[in-house]
Each structure stands twice: as C-alpha cells, then as structure tokens.
Image (cartoon, rainbow, N blue to C red; front, top):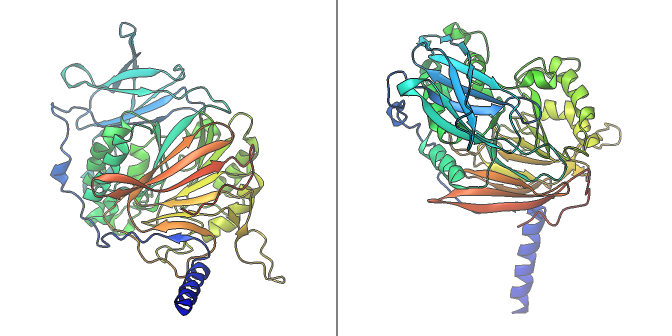
Length: 458
C-alpha cells in the first residue's frame, strides 16, 4: 500500500512538472473540418431588392455615433430613418455613401454606409434601412457615457466562418443575453478558401451574422482571410472586399488607415491593430501606436484592451510563433502602459496565458524566456469560432509555463467589466446544444488594482 501511494505521488509530481502547473483540457471534440453551409442556407430577405447584410459598428471615438451598413442588389438611394425609442413621432432621416466593387468574376451589390453622430448615451434607438415596402426595421442601444466605473459587457468571437459549428457559436452567443457589443478578432467569411475567392461567401456571411450585427456594434479586427490578395486572378489590391463592406471610425483616433484604430466604450479603451500591415519602426501603424498609448487616460477609461489577429503567446503548433516579430516590436509598450488584456485569433483553438512578458532579452545574460510580470497583459487566443478549416488540436507538449489554460474546441467569450478594478471573464465551449463555461477568471485592472489575480488554474 505504501509503495502504491509512493507511485501515485511520483506520477502526480511528473504531471505537475510537465504541465508547469497549468491546464490542458481533456475535452475532446472532432478534429475534422466542418463544411461551409450551402449558399442557399443564407437566402436574402423577402422583397424586391430588399436591404440585407445589415450591420453596425461604433461611429465615433466616444460612443455617441454609429455606422449603419447594408447591401442592396440594385442601386437605390441609401436612406436610414431612425428615432429614439418611445419617440416615433420624431423621426430623422439621413443618406448613405454608396460603393461597390468587382473581384475577378464577381460584382458586388450596392454597399451603403451611413454615419449617425450626436446620439444620446445609453439610449435605445430604432432604425429602418430602405424605403416603402422593402424597408427593414432594427434597433440598437448606445453605450453609457465614458467613465471609470461604468459596467459594460463585451462578447468575444474570432475566426467565425459559416459552417454548422460557426452557427452553433453564434447561436450560443445570441442566446446569451449579456453581451452588449462584440469584439470580433478577425477572419470573417473565409471566402478566400473557395475557388476564385468566391465573393458570394461575403454575401452569405453578412446575412448569417445579421441576427446579431444589426442589433449591437461589432468592433472589427482585420485577419489574414480578409487580405484577398490574389495576383493570379488579377487581384493585386489587398483588403478590397473587407474595406468596401466594413467601415470603421479610424479617423476619429487620428489613424491613417481603417486597418488600425481605437475607440472608447464605457470604461474600456479598445485598440485594434493589424497583424498583416507593416509595423516596423517608423511605419504608419508603429507611429500611430507610439502616439496612441500615452494618450490613454486611465482615470477615464481604466481598462485597456487590444485586439489583433496573430497571437503573440501561442503553445499550439498551428501558426506557432507567427506573431513573434510584432511581439518583439510592441510588447515593451504594452508592459510600460499596463495593457490589461490582448485578444487574438488565427489559431483555431482556445488558450489563456498567465501575465508574462519577454522583454528583457540579452544575448550575454541569456535572458530569453517569458517571465511572470504583473504589468503585462493576459493574452487570450480565441480563434475558435468554428470555421471551415477545422480545429487546431496539436498543442506543444509539455505545456509552457506561460500558458494557463488551453483547449482544442470551439466557442465564444464574455467579458463583464464591473468597475475600475474588477472584470469577470468566461469562455463558453460549444458543448452539444449548450454553451458550457469551461474557463473563467477575475481580472484585476493593471492601473487601479495591480495585484496578482487568484490562481488562474481551474
């Protein structure tokens, strides 16, 4: 019996040593990719040339503006009618800017973007796109005024696509009543995974996410599947479909490109970066971020959240180290300015890091490994929306010490900011017909409460 106990103890010690005290979930799901749903799974709305693919995003830096976007198959005047809930007699009308594009053998519909500014904070509005018999009605609620203790709840999804698994992820999110706005971490339609970058898949994806994106702001992050760079098809201008379809308020934060920008929303300062635009020294993105981070007033927006696509800390062999050069360039700034959380996608599984940094590299002293750092962000990889390329289930073994929790399955997350010091985070695995909270953590704000959080191990 004593020998048996001794053997068990040795095994447990070996497990702890190999895992470095972290968790690799034992949950197993199918590894084969889920096929994209047929085009006919996403029919246009009824009515001749009815508005479709309706989606909204924040339209200014403070949260009193909204950009409403939609598509019509034929050219029509782009008109939005909107009014405050309970004041239908006081309707306002505004016109859109309209664009369209061609991509290889595809010609888009007419894409409309309308910017509405000067809305009231924390107020429900109804809006109609289109006119007369094909007008469609939706609604949204503006965020509360920016302030340090303003509670707000974000949903988080990345690498969604349009498969049956994608549908399960989005249905789980929509059925979760908490999310007030979506932090979308890149890779939308996966049209480029189809022959000739089949841009009909951009249309079907727009119809697919309308059930959420027409009712709450989705904050867009560009991913590699938005590049659509195909010189072999005569398409040598990157980002063409994405930039035509998805408008963002980049000029409000003095950015020179819609591929990187910032917004304030409630008590959060959100920075969107692009992993696939130049970020070396003196490039536009580098120069913008260098000036942006010192501007943040943590007494006004205590929570600093960064969205980018290619993860900096990833213990999956899938896309391993692809974000390393960007990490080397920007990580010292993130630590200096005490960024709270960095969300990334790209790797089709889920992983949450400890608070670590790797900024003290010195070839003489051999300092070249991540270390615990209370000023560093938590890095969360959430490229697990459910796309056509399938799950990434080839984790590095043993689990590195910087990795707190990892699981090869699909899902979405909820980030509940409570006040200036605390936020509660949950990741919801797609499990059969129900979302299961498989990982959770209380975040302590790095500026107002820079203490070590309770054990991140579930």
